[in-house]
Image 1: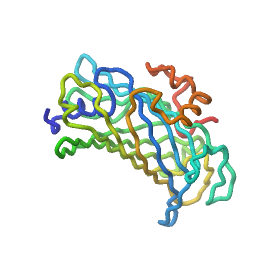
Image 2: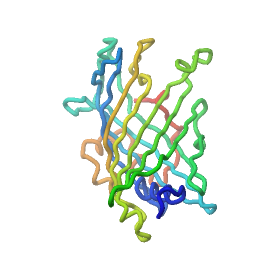
Image 3: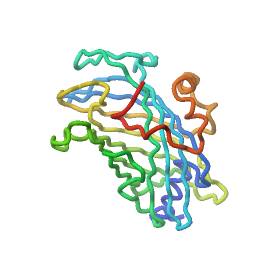
Image 4: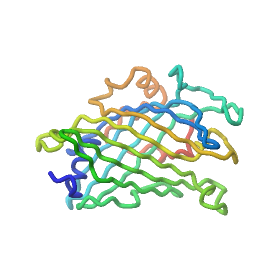
Length: 264
């Protein structure tokens, strides 16, 4: 395989990020979120969640990657789930929602080019996902993926873009093994990831016109099945979003959730 070739790069991504056979895959992740105000960072909370998805290779050689997440907010120090949260910047007491994201689909052409606009996005939302060149060192392969999303805020149509949209910037690094990726009999490589984010204030914080934004960092691991999820996370999913675990084919929820239309 030549990882400088777009077709081979996307095949490697499908094996590392998911399963190139089209079977569903599952990820666990955990991260921390910080407020960045006046160039000073302050820990806010931790997040923990799971993502299910699948890569489907179509007859023309192009790929669809469909995925969705369920994520919970946690106390950054104790790891306990946050039922309420006192915003350290505003002093307001707020209620963190269960974050349900997706299902979203990103598409690539047969030569590995990323389409700028994923299919079937909710109204007022646009996104761009880009896969950057792989880094190979011995048997280690690192694939960088960047997602930039903006979501129109209700009632802000006449404001400048910086206030009109909720901006999300995700930077992911996927780690796999060249030996697995190059094995024609392997469709699903063991994998880990790190991620960073730079976003506007999450809406449920109710920051108003407060200056600043949020940055995040975290880690993730691709799992074999749901039994490898941490017990507390599995319990939360079963209680709040049981369909997430019972729907490997990724049928749509009642609507496509985004960070600006969440519910408890």
